[in-house]
Length: 139
Image (cartoon, rainbow, N blue to C red; front, side, top):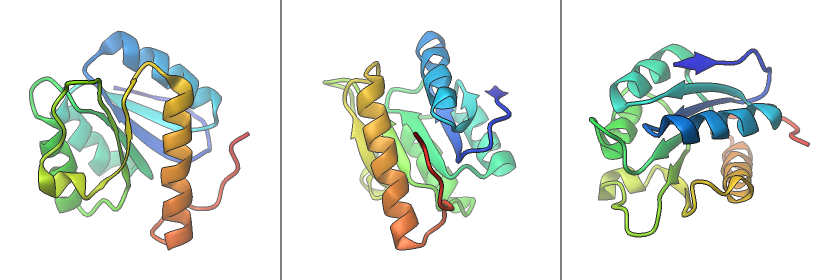
């Protein structure tokens, strides 16, 4: 688990693919996000309790605890953070109850431009709904 000292919106990235999560963390940090990374569902839930992220990015193919367990756990813990799902074609999606929390799906987890667009839409929606996520400006 790692985090950075940025002052932008707090994002939790839960991805068991260590190389991809390192790559995505670098991009998210360069966009101004304060990023915390967890490589399994259990660690992800612990990070939700300690960092209260404004956005959660979770891999649909987590090892150990599934993405559905992480999303449902976040809700039970009181998190109102929207969820962006990383999903490759042919991967299973979150359970029906968890899908209600998923505000966007990135179908190519290696596409940083797609991830950025989905994240910005998710945060803009949360900000306009008044559900959290303070106003911020990401270049």
